[in-house]
Image (tube, rainbow, N blue to C red):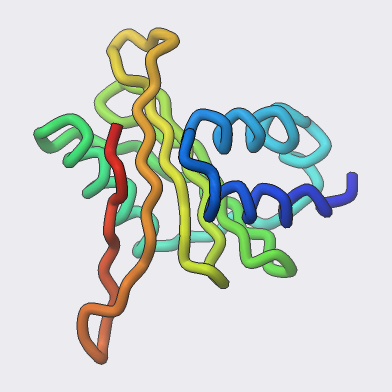
Length: 140
């Protein structure tokens, strides 16, 4: 499987205003393709992304939710992270390009899960010399 569509995903992530279109493109071209999941990337730990997922879900649901997140995959040649998670029993996932410092979180709006999904695009921004913060955009 060629990963040339990751460039199009990156473009959609920065330009598209309808977050569901970005997520559906990712799901259709990558996440739902067994070859992509099985053959590309390696499992990693990323505390920064763990924090972003946790804090963004807290913003989305207006309260702390327990996050189960232990399958982050990194494709180094594309500087791309992706992975599933559970937030208070809700099914979710994220994508993130570290070179442009932009990502998207998608999580089921309800528990038990339904077709309703909440999205948040986030960008990393410098907050001081020794660290970074995140800025959830357009929580919906």
